[in-house]
Image 1: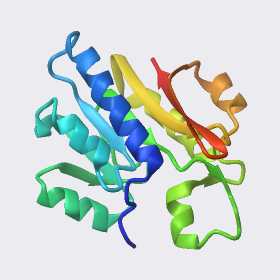
Image 2: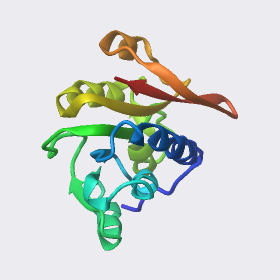
Image 3: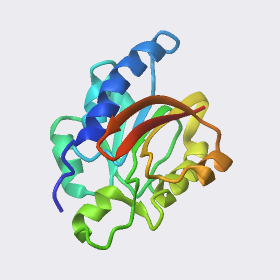
Image 4: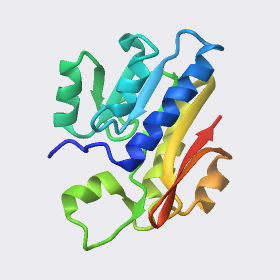
Length: 178
């Protein structure tokens, strides 16, 4: 399995994360950061510009991606969402697979892009598990698309849309959960 290379969604999230960490660092200096589904590690690498690598944990189900990040001295955990995660964090990020299933898409790329039949299933599983890994006053940032249904997400956990970017036939949105 190859490493998911950053695409438009990854770059939108990375640009936002730079500004976001700068803002929250003023209120907490020793942020514990968890990047779920890290892929290329773009978000973990952005976080490392602002905090010690010992405070950054990057997770993925892709061993190849994790080995590449280990070479760069990142702490990594092979995990399907929170399956192998222990502890609590101040900031959890997830650039979730968010598209509805499209049978025409190759199976390997579906792993990185498809969030389930409707597109929200992986995000819902993530949010249900995330609550028990969030420190008091911690925050979660989740990137989804306007193609992702949000009615179940809203019922599960209220959020604020903190960033938007229109692309072709969709709008990317970064949701903040507190």
